[in-house]
Length: 172
Image 1 (cartoon, rainbow, N blue to C red):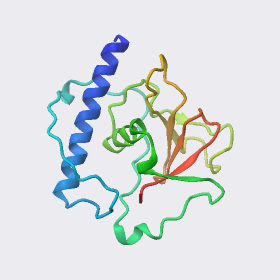
Image 2 (image 1 turned 60 degrees about the vertical axis):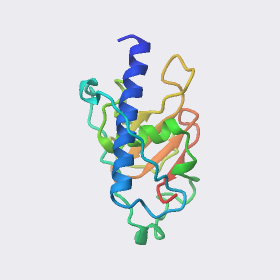
Image 3 (image 1 turned 180 degrees about the horizontal axis):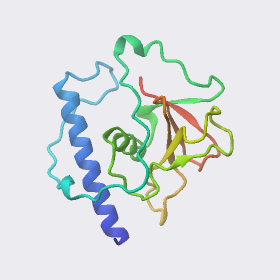
């Protein structure tokens, strides 16, 4: 598959996921959070013809946090900075939507085990973390941006290829 075709497939899948997310958000009345987007856009794509992901299954998406429990969210590691989901680049939010949907992913290596060799995330057993590529506009390869998920549903963002991590706070 050429890189141009890969980009077109990625855009089609992302639009389909965004349309599905927008439909779920408006059907349930939204999150009630002032920063939450309530716009819905009609998008026509052929996501059914998108290629199926190869490789290992991704971590289960994090649990949906009900508004009453959102105030009790505690980072998995208080020493680790956190970042509001809404503050992430759009491509990172697109990757999170793909993870929640279970794929398909644009890169063959998405969903592989992240080994935490740098020990910048809380120490867990081998196979606990999985990594997913965040598309970097203008990059000829996978770029340096990733989302790493843990088996308990936690999600981490790195913009510098594992140099630093921030835990993603889904409340905002």
